Image (tube, rainbow, N blue to C red):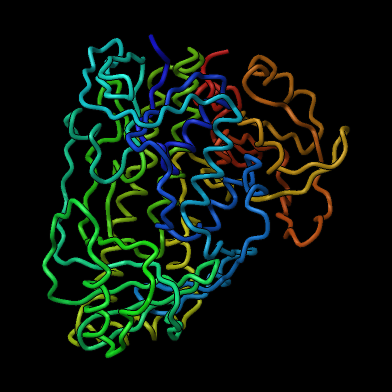
Length: 491
């Protein structure tokens, strides 16, 4: 074997997965077709859920001061994420190129082997491993790994070569995206519906402006190169009457509204994550965030199987947990596309939904959907409200001093949090101590502006490496050793 795991694609999902594997002590080779990062802004910012994920791995601090906001939208209708419990803020105007840079630096600092200028040509899964034919700077060669993960985008070579079924709907229109300089435009942060389509305008760092142009009736095209800025400026003028042709284009791209998802996230020894597994209209920047969450869900599970600590069945939970998330992603982005991009015939629906969103329950439901805060995994029956949900930030005080539930997840290991100083609990979990950190602590007052989670009568929590609660006392029907064996293998 050249590596236990080969990851194809060095975008956000691929880099996140590489870092997760290295945290767990698994060697990984990342193959990237491009010789260098593009530097293109692409997706902007990330959701609260992604910020929490970055924080639990110590990555968030790499971004420095981040502009945050509770303001968002659903299909162009204003939506205040502040209706959600706790401080729900999204990072704004962070170009995807910056996110990719920080994730790559993190992954390489952990020892990930990233090989740029290496294009995957074909692959073969023989049941014992995967052989990959690669064209690199020194010619064509073959690599072999126990597992292969495709994080190589919407046109994924891995997905096609491995024979994944990718049903859904084809694009019905083409839209333009451009980052421009040297011109002043009125802000249209959540978009403006016009008789012929929709336009969006938002500021980026460094005096750059992001524009999106969606002109109805524009047939989809499969382009081999980006559109010219002249095409973008002409469409903008047709919709708005404004002449932006004198602007300096920094980056120009085109995208469509295709919506597809693979029927399975694993075929044999090949897995998919991110856009390789699901494509959709980029409404609210959910795609990159979902891909990063795919990687965090998969990383620790794949590492446990590679290291022989968990049975193959653990990988089945990757599809079981993430496929429904991808399905809801396609549902909500298609709904937003209908609201955003349709003509006057949909205006009554916009008006009706706008009235409904004035009700806090409706606003909370939609906000949780587009931020990923609604996600709950099936970890077993029980009445505890955190079962299957992400562990909130909890300030803690213990024998070693102050810490937090977020900081405890930095090593990428499971955590058994004993909030009642229960020796019997720790004794029952001792056989898993090489895989799960046993921590005795009590809730402490919040530090700074971090809103505390109140554990109330909770005496213990088993937290998976991805930050989701797998067992709680009282409240879980499963016995603690049963839960530990399910998620961390036999002792």
